[in-house]
Length: 481
Ligand SMILES: [Zn+2]
Image (cartoon, rainbow, N blue to C red; front, side, top):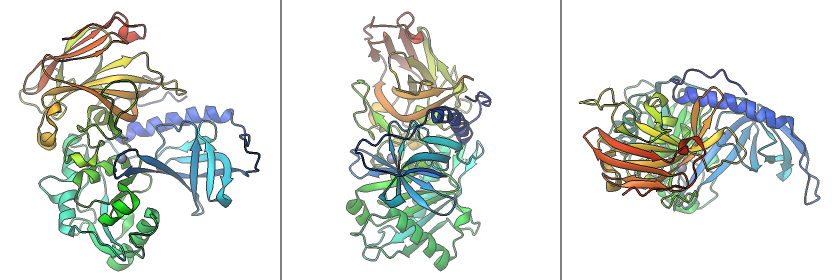
């Protein structure tokens, strides 16, 4: 395991690169134990080793019942292989990672079956960018032979870049100026939204979103002279008919390599643009577990985060995702290990810029959940993240249950021997609390209460049973109200 991780102040893509670098160690260890899997069905399947760059596609289905994920391996010779993993896939796998896969061929070599725990070896992390990142992005509007995108280009320009509210503006505000999607990467004075380009497909045909994107790329280069090499983030806006024919609101690469893609099937739903680009940046879903039984009730249910449903409209991101992205540095969080009262600054405001400044710059309290285990990844554990939200700026649309209230999320955290920690996997909202309300976890003797709040911070009491933060707490639940 590598321990030469940088200072905790490293942000965003930098921290993800380190995470990936550390994953190299984990997977290399696993690789040492690798042996060809036995074939239970008795059929012969050719053992194969493939090296290439991984692509992860997150598919957000239209009804948001459950998302799906697809993995492709791009070989150096231009080949593309579908990868079917069995077993627990590491939560940190991202587009752009260079991997060696040991598996069995299927479908005449078109796909590769890989046991994730033993057949996956990470060779090189995804490409990285600096901590303040102006992401070069382009939108291609894609018409089909029998269907066209109903939004005019000017509407899409507004949603992405130039409107009073825009995707670029949402990211800028949510990241305290660290993450943006500037409008005019090619420097011609106009937002980089191009099209519509017609592709030789019908909306009722196959759902070959990969083929659509490649056809649109060719059309944009040939017909409009768009130089796609300028853009790391490529967004394809599709006819609404596609949403129904193929049952997705959007798709996006999870993580970004040399370049990555988002597909938007509902052209006027701003939240879907923000959401898919969030996948490109490496974020997973913001769900809910309101009965706190350990399993997610609604994968898209956290209305306080753009990584929840795209239907909720403009809003910022929840505390775990802001921390994951490095927008809220870990130094602005406090790990709570004993009972006490803390001032938690609003998540919407940079504490340094808030006027009057809150008494403490803390934007999230973290409490380890000792009784939850994460399976085979021993460096991972769960924590509650406690933050305070208000309907300000892009959060003006927040549902009332978040207004001037404390949010409690359950979050999976990976910690390395150096002590550096990362948020991995999806997040779960478990409770929101107004003044005088409490969240109780009887299993670890935890009570979280919002005592009262001011204009820029809330006073939050955390009560822990003796030893509760250190892994020895059992029961002893207190009533909080
Ligand atoms: Zn999604």
